[in-house]
Length: 167
Image (cartoon, rainbow, N blue to C red; front, side, top):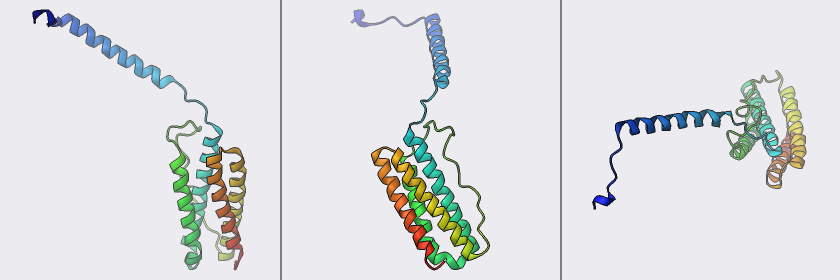
């Protein structure tokens, strides 16, 4: 059994080993932080733009709902659709992806037009622009994301049509 025993390390060997481990850890941490992330693929920029657009639409709906409470029954379901769209898009976003910014931008501050008719016209215009943007995005995205973007764009086109009636 004596042949299986290893001699205890000396104090000097333990100090040198510990110093080497600390030095390796420090050097490893600094070189890892210096590596550049690969540039974003086309889906990342498309996804980030779609997330920002949904956030902007939600902000516009919320501003209109605050300013024109009488439109709540008509606009709340459309607002809720955009909240769902944003949640689904955010589930596809991978944090830490190099997009040029750390994370997708927060919701912008928006004010609603003073009259109900102008508010509805602003929402209708925003929905049309969003539907058009999603159609363009779907062409550039991979098939799975393209399907999602096409569905969101179709919903936005439907919203624009819905807002056109009775404005």
